[in-house]
Image 1 (cartoon, rainbow, N blue to C red):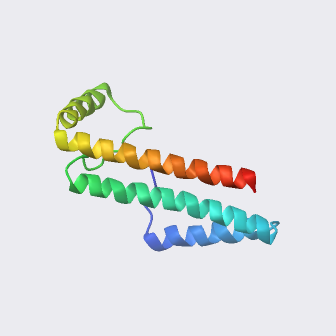
Image 2 (spheres, rainbow, N blue to C red):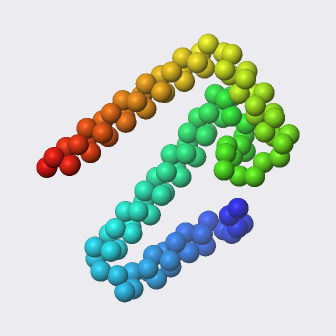
Image 3 (cartoon, helix red, strand yellow):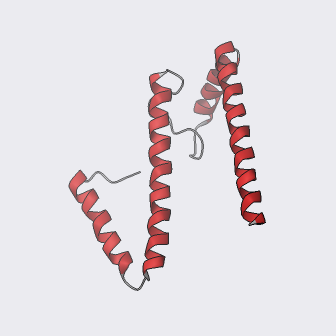
Length: 120
């Protein structure tokens, strides 16, 4: 997906785009856009790192792109078979349950914060 260019040129292109975006923006607009871009970068970094962890644990194939990309029927069937294997594994179920518990706690915490903001 990304072009095959040297790392220094790739980094330089980010600097150039950054300087181009500075023009015609107030400090607040620059701050808002910069924070948004940092959030995008954090999401990409977090996803990439977690994929490395999953690959290290043998739970995801190297080079896997998960969902979102067009995939062949063969790949989808293969993934379905692997998912069935994991579903049958008790350890996987307990990890899934732990993940769901953690996500539910996060949702509740976010709801509390939303209510606090609404009430203030």
